[in-house]
Length: 315
Image 1 (spheres, helix red, strand yellow):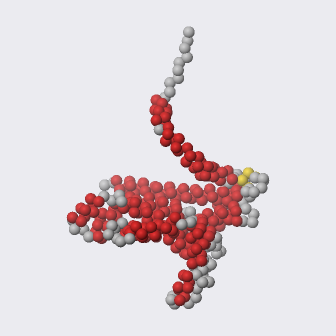
Image 2: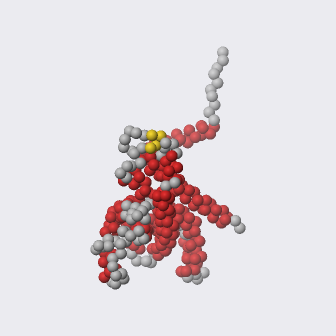
């Protein structure tokens, strides 16, 4: 009489099953987060890839499969490249300003002897938690050439002879948007630097004080070298955040005047929803290309981080 041999389970699978069972409640509590992440992040990404291959206005039943035609059209679309260039200009200008200004403020606010330091931190962080659309509407009124407080101040003090059209001029609109964007998100970069400052060992400051080092020498020889490992990470986080400027630009300028503030996110919105003849399939293709551009930016920065770490290990 023959007996059936029981199949042997590989050891690594057995150990994995034991680990999962031992932490089963962890996975149970992760289920709601995974469901929300899959519904609102993974599924829209996959849907965009599918829509990008269709000629579809997003409303009717007619959905014609066009393959890669939308991507080919986007790569030859001058407006797409212009919107991407404007987005990169915003990153190139605002990211260094945010990182350096936030670093200076963090060094100042990290001083325990500074009075009202917590009040200043809260005041600088308030714009971060304020809805960007509200800030866009309010700042549009603030910079209004027909009675806005900024122009009233400039004219009344004699700094200018006539009101400046901050948002209606193609030469002034983008710098104004970048100024407001920097002010709104400065607080989050400040929080990054304040968190990084907490990692500097107190013993290093005490040793520098014993050696008679002043404020500037301590900053140059102790604080800044300890913060350098965080610099690229903070720049990376700030750059990725800066690419998401849709709500602020849409409420302040709508991409105008003459497409001078047409960032890629606003261009996608116009193609999909604000056009008289919406093109959801083409807008999805532009969105996929914009996502790939973001991925390339992040990858380049990660490679820079790895290169700097590799050089730092070399004698």
